[in-house]
Length: 307
Image 1 (cartoon, rainbow, N blue to C red):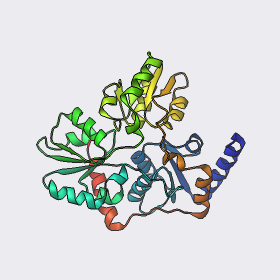
Image 2 (image 1 turned 90 degrees about the vertical axis):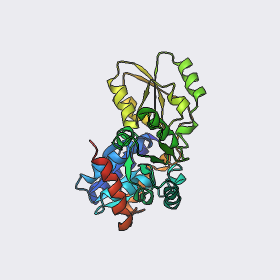
Image 3 (image 1 turned 90 degrees about the horizontal axis):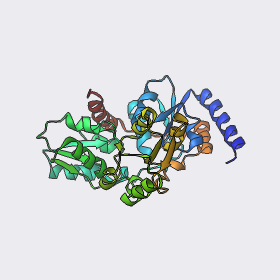
Image 4 (image 1 turned 30 degrees about the vertical axis):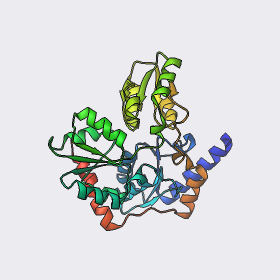
């Protein structure tokens, strides 16, 4: 799309946003032109919390389905729109509420710690949620002898187990298709090409990739670290969309994507025309059934209560 077309779409979206009293949220992995039209850019749960605190009537979530569900859970009185209804998350799809109920029967003594990258009905079956930035804190808040069923990301769960030293964490067999593509060989090749660069990766990466990193952080954590670091070059091990904010935040620093495989097609499926259509037609709407919402909210609030 040519820049003049981008500007035209963005202008129309801003006009419609004002008419609808809407707030636009964009995850860091969205296309740059979508990020640039958003009111808030960030990680998924942080965005939902920011939207809940506004007086907007409408939330337009430029992300994937579970993120829009989280917004609906935290803002039941607002209309939540997901511009691309088919924007899902393969990792979230790797656990279902029914499968989780069966696993809970196998491990009745275990507390279910649920990564927020999961569907609302899965959160409803869980005891407490976590994000990639607070997962260690959430697990450390539980009694050391307490078995934990960590869902759905085995890579994040493995990293948490190593950080906490706990050997009683049962890992669900799930993973992020994008982060799990990154290999040890990719990191070694990037380090050879950029020997002065620090390696920053997301904890959804494989353990042997994490082992080669200078820092392991959530998406927002990677940006904060790069902003505050005295280093001038960084190899980035997370989805490519983060480069837009890194370059805006730290224009005097160099960032190299660890692999050209780090592209999430679901995140990239949201476009400016789809955002405009959502505001015009007030659809696709994302809702969560009240009985699911109440239980999912309990799991989120238990997490938010941890200080």
